[in-house]
Each structure stands twice: as C-alpha cells, then as structure tokens.
Length: 232
Ligand code: MN
Image (cartoon, rainbow, N blue to C red; front, side, top):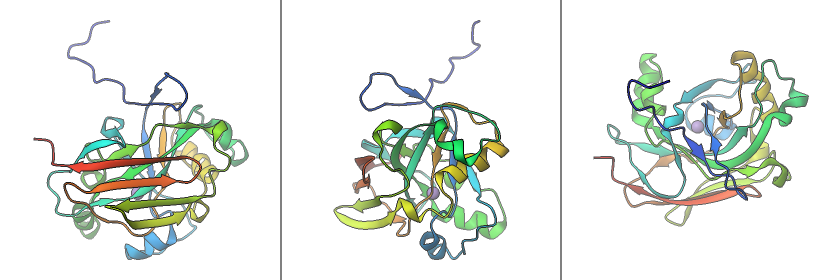
C-alpha cells in the first residue's frame, strides 16, 4: 500500500529496562478524580459515574527536556497524574481482571488551558481546545507493571522551581484503576497501547516559560522538565 501523504509517526513511550518502545493508541483522561482537586475547581465529587475526556496520541511528549507552552492561553496549568498503560485490550473487562490488562505505569502531566476550559464550562461547550493541546500529554517512560509493587498507593507530587505545588496519594483516587479500566471498557473497545491519565490531586496552577517542573509518583517514576516558549 502507498499513502497519499506521509503518515504521522506512531507516538511512543520508552519502556524502562528494554529497547522496545510502547506504541500509544489513545489517551483517556479521568476528570475530577481527587476530591480536593474537584473542590478547588468549584465542583463536588460524586460516585455516580466517572467522566472522561481524550487527548490525541500525537499530543504526547516525553516528560523531559524542554516542553513548549501552549499558544492562545494566559493560564496554562499543570496537573500531575498517574499514567496507566494498557498491554491488553478488551470489552466489558471485569474489575477483578483489570490489572491483567495493564502493561505498566508512568507519571505525567495533563497540561490544560484553564482559561479556555473555564469559558467552555460557562458556555456548555466541549473541552477539546482546553485539554487536547499539542504537547499537553506528558509522561515518563513506562515502568513495567511487574516492577511496581502497588500502583494504588504512594505519594504523587509536583514541584515548580523547587516548591511543592501539588501533593496527594494514589490511594485518594475517587475511582480506582480497576474501576476505571472496567468502566472505560464498557464505553470503548480498549486495546493495547491505550493510556489512561488518572486525574490530578489539588494544587493545580499556572506555569511560565523557564519554570522547572519536577514530578514524582513514589515507587513508579519521576521527571524533570522545563517549560519553553510556544512553538513558533
Ligand atoms: Mn487532569
């Protein structure tokens, strides 16, 4: 087969301990999955149903080095999150089998045009241009699941220029990893390569060019990156 135009390269994440890259298919993001973050956004958490938004896999960038700011925002926010990578797909996955579908974990950032999101919320519009931003899905290399003792517990934190801005624990997820995988698999046919950003603890805030962001999820991964000017 020939392509009419050059196909986009497959987005990938490195896998710790191997030369094999993990090919990323889709990026699902869980909204309001920490009660304290929901509260700072003026919302309440309920256990009625989780909700999601998506980012293009092509908006993934490794959480290291220079990361461009987004254009068309005066309030570009950091959201540090656990990243779950699926190594097996499926539909209607039972919660008690959910971890069989996990390939590995990372920690990353769901970067957000907060001003655009606020307007979208106020006007009842979609969040796409607030969330599905180029270079806004940032993740460390993946740590294979076999090396992660307990992805449901551990401190997750973000420092900006050395000051702790976000801090929480993976045990505080409103919806657990197995609940999210099971629920998503009733909405979509999940497949190997899908990433899930599990939602952010409280303390989200704006970044500026030159800011150094250091994120960590204990027992999983950590990163350091620098915010750079928007793509020219
Ligand atoms: Mn988020």
